[in-house]
Length: 109
Image (tube, rainbow, N blue to C red; front, side, top):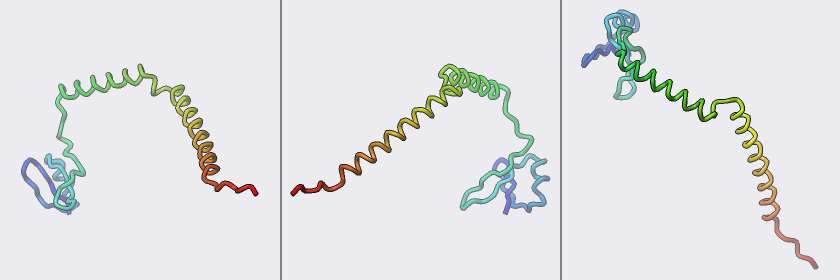
């Protein structure tokens, strides 16, 4: 069952009415338990330009931080893959040592 939601209005609708209510500025939601989950937002909804500018600036700042840290480069990725391979080799070596340590000592007669 679908619901058309706008402000504090919640109208139960059929799937055939979905596009009509979207054009009228309603969000389309589905019921999940006791809550409504929005599955389609009304196309008439907008984000203010100041909010857009704030998010665009934050995005640019984060991209600069990633570039400055070098963590997004292929060289950094290759280095991390090498570290992972070394760690896996060390784990295998330690597993063998642990297995050897757990073997009962043979008594010499």
